[in-house]
Length: 303
Image 1: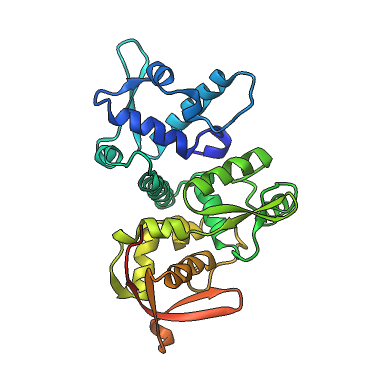
Image 2: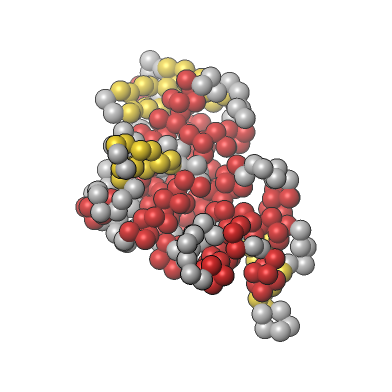
């Protein structure tokens, strides 16, 4: 399913609000009830429209469809022919235990589900979602050469030249993609000059969110391999192979992931032990700098 083309209004904040409500409804809820109970301000990021109610309804409908594709929600027809939505039993406890003022756990859950869904699609010889493909592609780019948030000032040409217009085709989809990337802990927006802003691709938050799922101490190659099984969009070979021919394949660990690892090292969260044996090392490269890492140790899981 293509999220940016078919369900452009879907968003991670909307998925969170819907999930929190459905976690309190063991028997599920019809869409009319969800629309009535969930305030428009809580499920839409779009402002200043003349018909906020209709806009919120579209956000809800789009987010339900995306949530079902991600295996967050199940739906079935009720006796009245209406669809009744339920939170998947497998994630009910995870959602129910989320702190009220902290959505990091949900952000990580959605990223893992989106990544796993993309990998499943590849293995079934199907096309992953446009969001998953676009995330994989931007994460392979040089993080020191960010794209403008303005579609007309670089991103359009970059996607065109890379053969990635099938993932992100226009300015509206580029804005929606940026919302996904920021909400999932993959990117931030920074002001570069005057009113110009750029999208800084940096998966540090996404990596930090899953450290408790990774070995506390492991050979670097194996540690990063396990990381990519948990979050394939960070550079899993299967997802990279689904990108258009001519896409630069990373020699070693993708630069954006290398950047995140180095940032966590500077914060004292990771210990990246160097290796003198090139054949048994993971290579981290950012710009002109490179490091051969033999072992990764998690010093602490930061809050």
